[in-house]
Length: 225
Image (cartoon, rainbow, N blue to C red):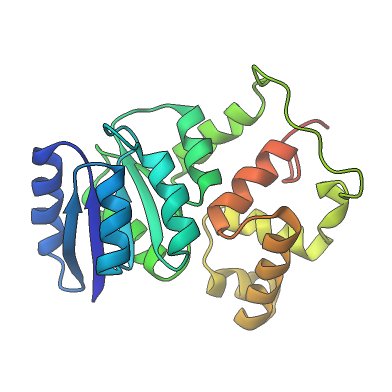
């Protein structure tokens, strides 16, 4: 049973999601929150497997709540759910540690698949969302990015060829089993590569790894050539 926490400031959204998810035999909504502060508290109290997190809420917003929850309860997967089609928020949410990003007009199957993928420790980025993230990565930042430490190696030289292959497959939304099959290795080897990738990029989730790699131009076909 996948235990789910819904965080959204709109009652109709919370009740609607709760009703939809109650129809799935392997899902249970254990709590709902109306803002980020409640989401952080309930995440600690209820220990859900997955949180559906709205980004725009009064008081503490979803992005701040994600940061707090990832710091305090890193084992909980967070899927951003919002009506706003804003590329900057997508990037910031993924960088904060979200496992995926869905718009509220997403179909039921995509919603269910994303929750199950998140519960398995995987991520499911929809192709249209990934395309917008890629486009955003090419947009010059409005403020200068902080300089990397002098002893930090460039990301494109930090990852091995095999790690780049794994990361590219992750960006496509492939699961560990599918990656292992395509590369002719075991799932344990794929997990080991992912651990190395996380350590080198300074992230702790598949979605954050993809986001950082896209921004740095590490993935094939992204960034400066």
